[in-house]
Image (cartoon, rainbow, N blue to C red):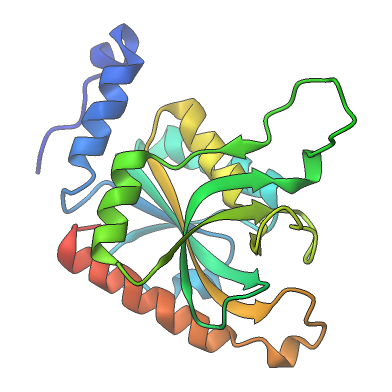
Length: 210
């Protein structure tokens, strides 16, 4: 197993620590798979997991604590999502996580509205999952509130923002389970979406050793 970056390296140059973690993200261990619920994690085998809770605030707090306690080399955030044009169980890799709840075009107060995935990690995951759509994903604390994007979920911004502040590479991978605005939860294809996530993580295990 490659050695972890040292504490002195982190203190001297956070950018070097981040680059080292990206390089190590292809090693067998050290990638933390984060999801909002145990149901989204229970089908995944052979990976270290963290259940972060539902919504952006819980996700950010749990991820920050997980990073502090486990010092992962990288984070793969997975879960189901709603979409306006994509049919279930399409896979989506987030090119941005857009925090729709704080967007206010009339406000003059500065705020952080977007979190970026790590470019190298996103590229590696997309090589392993070439059929995945590359799209921005909205984060909203309310189902149906992610109007800024075609795809919406509830935790991505919180996870990616916590990772960015800690200097840990992260990327968001979602499987579409329902149409945005579909009120009948019985019509959500959650099992199909979870199966798609299981297969995707299995492929990542095979090809980039998540």
